[in-house]
Length: 119
Image (cartoon, helix red, strand yellow):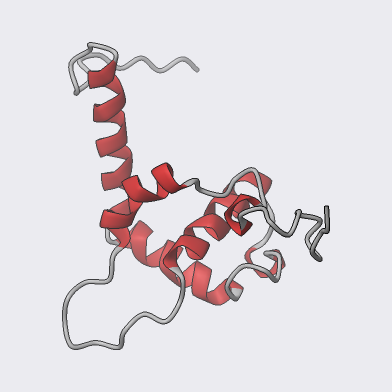
């Protein structure tokens, strides 16, 4: 089987380059929360799935923003979206929705009733 420059078989989906890359189902859950807002602003030209993959890659590996692999969008675009979503509460909103969904699926109340912190 032929391989491309990323040591991935050529017929393999590029979205599985790294273990941190989103699969289709995961991206479908996140996509509605990171869509471009309606308005007359400049239209997005960057692949938002690749931005998310880069953010999750950085989170998983701990690399510096400027050290993101070159097959991701340029680091400052990735940083821009990360910072924007952090500041506008998108990450917190996504986390809340996912937590509620997981708790509901295992038969628990969507909201936690008790918190415990151990030092």
